[in-house]
Image (tube, rainbow, N blue to C red; front, side, top):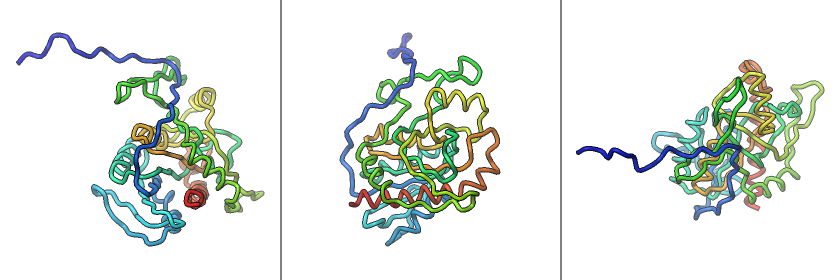
Length: 279
């Protein structure tokens, strides 16, 4: 059988610019909260705070169920990078239909005002590596065709209900003192902007371009994709990240030194946020 000479569908229309996701109503859900971390370091304090814990597997991937301040929670580790995060988020969201998804963890400090351990609650979560390089290190962002034939967004506002709960939690949460720094300080927790891409270290020119176009506080490798999955599945989402190393070309040593404290601060605030959700 010969295929048709002309294709039914034409090449997609590319819409230039930074596309912002419109708010969508949440779909029917079950009474549980899905909490994700990219690596075990980022989720272990959440698991420590849980009660009635049970270790299980879904399609071979481990997760933990239990209670956190009386709320039913499911805790899973996605692995590093956007592909792993997309895969695990899709799997767990479709299986459990959670009322909301929270992502906790560390991120590099692309805003120079952010200190190690400061926590940013993602009023905006976005992807910074989807587009074309028209000039060296300068990205041309655009909305490509999405899975629904839509103009796919790249900027995802945090869920309004979750942001309201997070602001309540900020008023009562007490971070740990950053006593490993001299002089010591109490980390801040505030709303802000988080961006994601599949690069661990990037050049100074790319940092400048990302800051100029997206103005993020933190940069990491997962939450933009998690936000995108949750937006398409109509599942409320909020990202909680804490600053580890500064955003730089070769972050490995600084990341290993600074990420443990940042992991703790993001996880502890996530626990405080779940308490507010229960209230």
